[in-house]
Structures are given as C-alpha cells and as structure tokens.
Length: 462
Image (cartoon, rainbow, N blue to C red):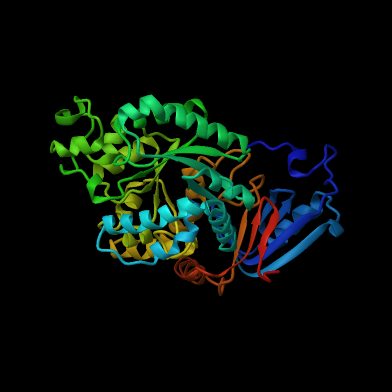
C-alpha cells in the first residue's frame, strides 16, 4: 500500500507532526508479515503502526524523522508482543449459555436439544445484548481485536462495536424452505438488513446458516444479495457427518452427473436419494462459494472438497473444541488442509459449544490435532500463529488495504496483544521453543490489548 507522508504522521516538509508517538517494546515481537524480532519495538502514531523493528532501529528512525523525543512515550513489556488475535468464528450473543457448552452429550442432536431449551428461555427475557457485549469484552481481555461474529437476534448486533473491535457482524439466515423464502424470506432479510444498517455498524455480512437448515433457493439468492451489497458471507459447512460425501474423493462436481443435472430442493433431498455429493460440493454447485466467503468447521471435507475450497479462495475457520463438545464425529483434517495449502483460521465458536472465548485455548487443540494427524514439520507454531492473526483477517478480507489487521507493519491498524510468557531469544532454537510454548500454553496470559492504537485492556502490563 502506498502511504503519503501525512498519512503516517509526517508533514510535507518531512517533519513529524505534533502527535504523541507510543513506542511499545518487548523481549520478542511477532509481526507475522516479517521475521520475529528479539528486543523489538512497535511505534504507533494515532491508530496506525509507524515502524516495527528492533528497538534500536525504531528509535533511530524516529530520530532521523525529526520526531521530538519528548513526544515519544515508551511502554516496555517483558514478554511477547504480537498482532491482536482474530477470532474467525463466534456467536457472542450466546455468551450466557455456558451451561450448554460445559455439558456432555451423546451426539449432535443431544447438544441441539440442550441448546434449543436454553435459547427458548432466552427468547422470553431477551438477554442477547447483555450477553453479546459481555462476550465482546472477554475477547478483548484475551487479546482478540477482531472477530467474525454471527448475529441471530438484532439486539446482539452491536457487540463488536461496543468494544471498538474490528471484524464483521454476520446476520444469520436459517430455517427457510424454498417457497417460504420466495413468499416471505427475502422481504424479512431486507427488513433485517435495514435495521442493521441503521445501527451504523462498521461491517455487516450475511451468514446462510447451513445446508441442512436452508433450502437451495436461499443458498442461490443470498450470495447474490450479499455481493450486490458489497457484503461478505460466512457459512457453517461440513460440520456434521450428514454433510460428508459418500463417494471416493476423486468425485468432482464437474463430472457428478448422477446429481448435478437434477434440480434438488435442498441438500437433504439429494442425500435421501442416495447421491454421493458432499455439502461443500452441493453448495458449490449453487454458486455460493467464492473469495468473499469463509466457512466454519470444515470437518467433513474430503480431498475434492478441500480442492474446491482452495480453487474458490474460501478459508476454513477451525473450531475443534466445539466439534468435540457437539459430537460432530471427528476432528477436521488439519494436516491435510495445511499440506495442501488451504487458507486456515481459528474460531472459538460460542460458549454454548466451547469452554472459553480465548483463541489460545483453541490454538493449543489445533496444535495437538495436527501432531496427532502426523504433521511433523517444525513450522507448526508459525503456521498456527498465522491462523490466529493474518489467517483470520484473510478469512474476512481484512488482510490488505488501509484497514488491514492481523499483522504489524507500517500503515496497518495498530492492533496488538501482549502475552506474558517466558521468552528466550539467545539462539534460534530458543526462539522456536518460545513460539511453541506461546501456541500451546498462551491461554490466559494476555496482559494488554491495543485496538487501533487505543489501550482497550491493561492488566498491569506496562
């Protein structure tokens, strides 16, 4: 991105403007878009990163640019400084449903029954805003600065904005059959989007819930509607065993004439007739996938499914703790996703299906599953750190441009997390050990969160 001098705080004559520069230094800085930096520092001017590098280099740059030393405020942190975390899939309005997420169930249906019971109680008292705002605060306290938040009830729509978080509030659309959708659904969606726009939220998207709760016509129309409105899409996909394809992985959507020539009312009808298409292949045949879409879960994805996601530019948000609690059958094929080059991010889902909203809790499970599945390369921690930051940003199309997040580089929005972990940086081996420890044991150790240059949370970090 080309930045004018004034856009990064330098006046036309080359001198710094009079705003305060905050210099955050730490034992280890992880920019994600550059190598890790022992004894690093990040200079922030306003809401954006001005410089990132070694502390000595950054101070030298500030001096060379003529910035008055009295206008530089240094805050040192004796730990890891990294981009703010990006939670790529959550439902903040269910924060008050932790009793469901802490339960034990025989199968996915058992979890659904428990969820529906508590949700029905909520429908009487409408606690959605209170719960959603509390969930957003939990995100901030755990080092998260952006999220893909699915909103089912309008009262919860302002959760991200309530804490100044970046991300997208995705309006959830579900339980529409084809004819009802034509008769009432489109009108209802229009009314809901009008209400959401009136709230002046930073970013709004649409979430077609899943191929087992929506017929084919909504899945055809919703992407078209979102794209005309310049909105992104987020779908629960390949989460349950029902959505798995029954044919070998060599099946392609282009040659599956046993089902693609038919006009199916919905995915369940296709499955009922014994066809072998997966939910990913079915949704793809409707034109519902693309680089403006990311999916949650992606558990039941065979080789062809994963190829489709790559070809369409669709990221998958991994939520393994939720998959375990809701009994969706197995863990996502994390190793294969990584080996094959799929875009990956991580989400906590909601407290109705997960024990916490701390993305590090989820990352530790992703790490363990990848190793169990045979991923033996020594870059695993690096890749998971990317999933937690830049990968989440990429999932929402927020990884490039003036509003980019999930990275620390000049001109990016200044979103930072400060993780209180022992840091050893004398040798490359020590640095790699620090990164492993960060991914596996970082949960609960965030001590400060900066969002767009603003200190949004500080637990005596500096």
